[in-house]
Image 1 (cartoon, rainbow, N blue to C red):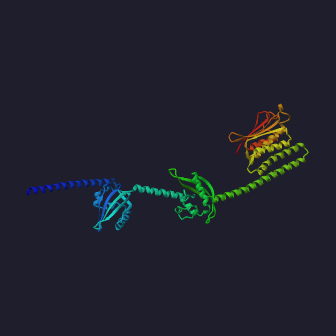
Image 2 (image 1 turned 90 degrees about the vertical axis):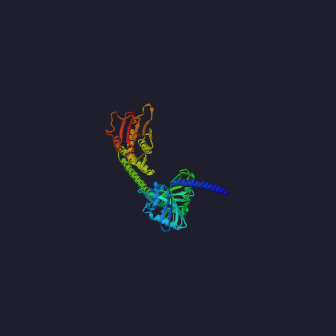
Image 3 (image 1 turned 60 degrees about the horizontal axis):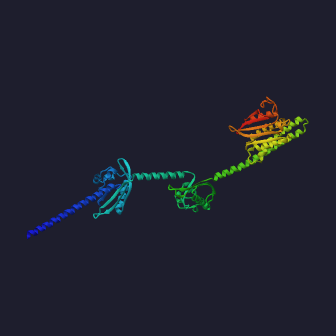
Length: 498
């Protein structure tokens, strides 16, 4: 019986031992699985996982340092765990004090350690962000579970963004044009330095959240906001707005303003971008120029008026002198000279009554001088045909051209029509002024009369009228040609500008 009891006890102990072995094997498997999971996590975390212990007596040690240290810090984990100074010596000399201070403060407060600084790895400076959670143990030591992340790329992007913003601000603050932008509620979101100065602000940032009612130009607030609303409603720019700006702290000004809709990359309207420049001095200068031009116009009109009057006096003197000449031939010469003076006087007369003080409507001028010639020579039987493009000539061109037509028409009236032309057709003098190639004018004076004697050369004739016509043609840099056509046809080609 005692043997059976002993056997049963041994069997029970053996079963208990088997159970313990099974539990131990399960625990080992669980531990291995946990360790594998932990290693998997530390291997996939985007940084170095570490455990750091700080003793009350000042000793320190890394209890754990994940394998990523080899890639990120070029140092093996076991080397850092054996000698923690290996890690701290990698910290940039200008950032060691900030790291030490942050560790001490986090230890004193038992708060999360949060540090951003540089570390030198194989001569290359990198930026890191370290965070760790502290836990004070019963022996007063502090255990830190933390993570160290390489943020060099992010830091570079941030610095480039800061540089880009700085450059944009520098550009905006360097241009003399005032620049501003608003949201859909017509509240200011920002401006450049020049605009802030106009608004009496210490810095451009002070304008954020303000509207035009908060600005020194409160009297124009609704006017400016109405322009903003129009841009918002139509989603179209409003450009070259000339508008006033009155304020209490400065003299009134005139502005040239441009406003365009601000639309983001998704096509959503988010606000209004505007700019303006002070054109007060420009407008004042324009007013001075306008006043000066008006004075000159008055003076020029007076000059034309006096020249016209003087020429009319000369014409009257010639007419009076002709009355005392008994020789009909001599009297006729005086009368014809009077007509020439009258033709020159007409140019200044037309300029005096015209709003354009430098150009003469040549078509109207031709009608006037040829009409007077018809009356003077008492030739109602001669029909005038005047065909001109809209031609405006300067005084320096109109006077010689007018005298040239005057001489050629006079020649036709005096010599071309000795009787009725063949076929019972009326006597006709035709004058045309048309554009010619190479930026020239083509002036034609023609009649259907008996024509000039054969072999005559206008440039070598001894008659006063044709001599004057040749001289006047040279004066306008033209070329006078007698065309071989029925009647008499003179063609003058001359440049439009001379």
